[in-house]
Image 1 (cartoon, one colour):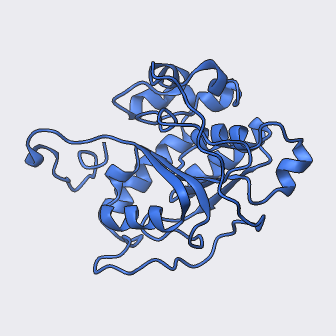
Image 2: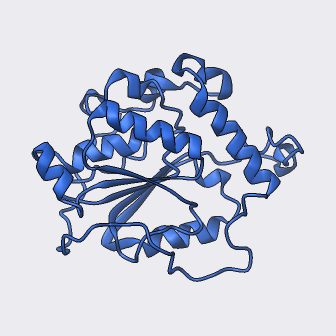
Length: 244
């Protein structure tokens, strides 16, 4: 397994809260998908089922290992697993490990785009608040992990997992990758796990990720890439072939 390396030291910033706001990113011709979009509805319905499923039933919804087996298979070491309790690990349904290229340092700000049940966000929260007391972590608004999630059901699951993990530096917000509700230059690290392949306007989503990145920061993505004939994965009315 590749050695996990610390993220570079943070660029000096003022300790102001990272609060949701109106996206200031440049508009594109397509823009973010609306909630009435059939493809988006297929995604939401699928992850609604995942959010409402018992952790032991997640495997039926995905074509790859989930839960702790998925975490261990993707190279999440014991040091990272120890940052979240077993009940939270059981909710994992990511496709890769966005922490392999480097870890955030204590005191940095991390954004997890499409955080799902919040497992990666909570791991990041444990890393950026290392060495802080609960009161310090809750009070240091600039040093936190933000999870952004489109599905209201997944958002609820993520917030419950934050409670289970006792994560005081994790904040979860509803929103879309193509219109991030944060000011420019807000984060030292932007991560995403298995989400960009589901976003229809990928150039817009990537532009938004770089917009909210601070100077010297990094974007670390873990995702699925289609190889072979594109026609084999065309979207169907039920949405399943497009959203898997």
